[in-house]
Length: 97
Image 1 (cartoon, rainbow, N blue to C red):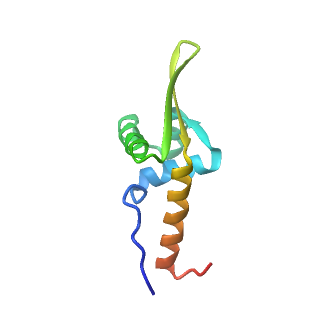
Image 2: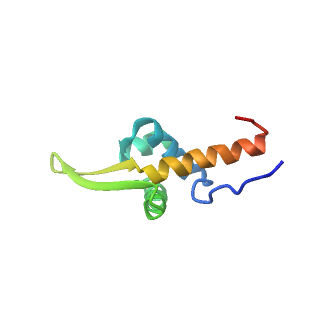
């Protein structure tokens, strides 16, 4: 059995949660992600930046009704990285596809 390396960007619990969430909804507002992950705003901000730097998500800051709004969207690179992560994780579990 060969064990594949797990992507260190996605191997963080919070970053994995953010990407998993965005895989299912395609894009989400920062506050929605914060509520779903139970993360602090500060920690979530840092992790979102790491995902953005890796090219896994796109972050758009805009205004909605005079309030700042941060939208996060999964990128094709992020989708591929997530699928690869899941596939590699399955190799640890001995799951055959």
